[in-house]
Image 1: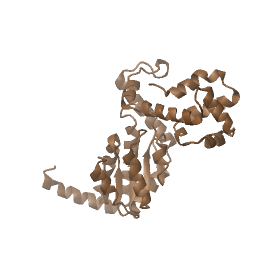
Image 2: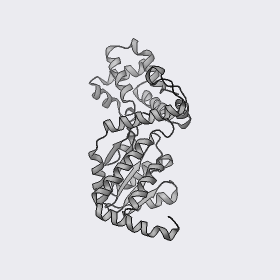
Image 3: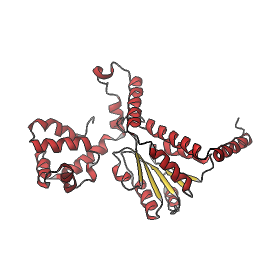
Length: 287
């Protein structure tokens, strides 16, 4: 699947739509990642059209109503972000007119670059300082990332912990991790990494943190709206490049920003702790 089928159907029928239907179609194609959480009334209000117009548009596509269209789009998105679909898209040759002849290695590097470029052009850099302030104020920092999201979670935890901060990293999602996450308190904070494919453990972790009134920070693509909307703070990283591992270029870059900004925020204290760590490494035969 190279395009969610509902969007492909909209594109195929677009020329036959009425003016209002084209307005609805354009909005859905541009904001389809937000649709699973939008009701008929919310979509109608965003477009300043009637609820009936949304329903008629859904029926024009062959659905009984908007709810059925929304559920089908949600299924499409799950299939679109599946690992086998991402591998398939990664193997599709690029548009020769846009980026010329490329082998697969060139294509991956190019899409990584595009992903980073989009991130830097749209990223609100003040959010890095906001995260630094939260980390410096919290009693303990919980860093959570399951599946491939464990990659940025472990990287961020490693560098923050060796600067002397009280951190805990949870990446397995098993009973032991879940049980430990429940020990989070109001004075703590949680950074959770998410991807377009949600798992119940991620939602559960945020629900626990919210129940304990801890500060929650989501880092992930805009399409993970269900998880990001649950958190006090959300940083969207570009997910335009959805092939296998590509999107993590932006995750890692953001982690580096946070780590360096955190280091600078308490430079003398952090430098002293890092030096103490280095002095102890020879005890482990680490040169």
